[in-house]
Image (cartoon, rainbow, N blue to C red; front, side, top):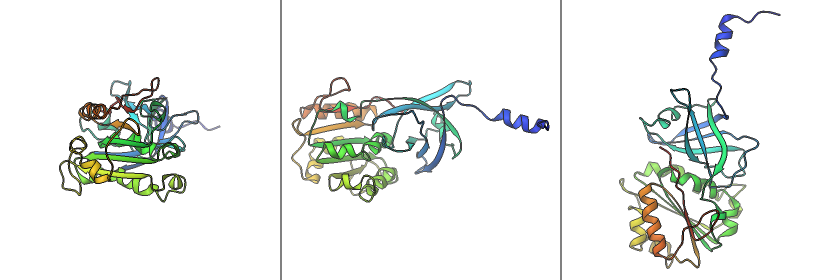
Length: 272
């Protein structure tokens, strides 16, 4: 048996071993602020579409640096997809934005979250309200047949600063009708309502403003939001969540939870 060379030994020792490691399979950058990536899925991982997990990398101090990320892929997918912002001085995203296929990340396989169907009581129309990367949990739910089995009408609103920041959500929505796995469930139930707040686009304005002045309802041809028929999920900035809670409760909706389902839910986990 030949003795392993010192060079080979050094190279092998240099390969980092991460706890709860998963391998990056693809990365796509949408803008200088947004990117999406896919990783391998642990065989034992079971989650409900809309939940989040803790993912991350090793920090400079040798300890895991973890943040909550919504799983953007549906529960039936063989891989896990994530949609992330890039923060140049962010402890995690400053490093995470540079990952490449073949790299490893840490993924703690304990999914949790409130943006799940079980946290809502039965209804006829489901609203998804998202800003920025808050679209991620809805990317999961929009690709889940259960969403369309439970509701007659699904409306997803997505508000971003610029048109390019809508690309991830727009491409996903546009792909659903032709998707061989989900298309037949989607049918004509899904409506997409994108808005921008800075760059000019066909529909401008914050979704909160457009709800308060009735523009959304006029554009979509519906009377409004009612606790008898409407259910809602909210994922965005703290300011958006607070404003939408007030608006939805003004329509008579109550906030729900896994242990106490009601008419709307808000995700309280953030990526920094």
